[in-house]
Image (tube, rainbow, N blue to C red; front, side):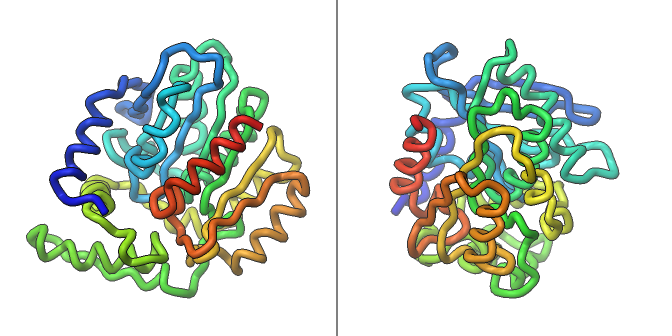
Length: 286
């Protein structure tokens, strides 16, 4: 478990060590953060976070891979330090902003690995439709590819009233993390709380309505690049359930790896970081 001072130090250290890349987003910039060597024999690893998140959704993934390859994490439009997207927006228009930005973030037409967590997978699928010729593999992590489930505990999140002091907000945010993001309550340490509360205070992106649709599955028909999927078997967001998603993946691409982490919830790369990093490393090297 990570205590509060250590949590802040981990986040600050990663932020201090990154290189900032800015690309157009609406009337402002989309912010990308890059770690690791500027040049490597290994393809860059591009990470897209979940809804109401930021680059720090990958706080336990970035250090594992940045020693050997460039790791690039975006703040999606309307999240973190990135500007808001033009209205109205949908998955395709958000993906267009990101795809255009990737021409700068990974220059020279170089191939790259793309990993999308949750809503990051929803926009990752139309990015692959556009840039599939450059993507070594699109790995979907915890994305409800048939649309976000409309029942279950992931839909029972409590609103956080404005004007509460941090100590009053924290129990509500913790309860929401337990319902949506993790299976084991003790996975919610000070690091999870620090980054989640920071992200929620800054997000403007309205992602849930988009996530209810079958955008991901629709865009992955006749895939333009190799695919892989990683899920926690206790993920409450999946529609209709894990087996339903597995059957959909078999129909989309029977050769795509479908990897399941046992007793793990939606935020697999945080709750089961060691197992997740090992699985992702195998995919990247395959």
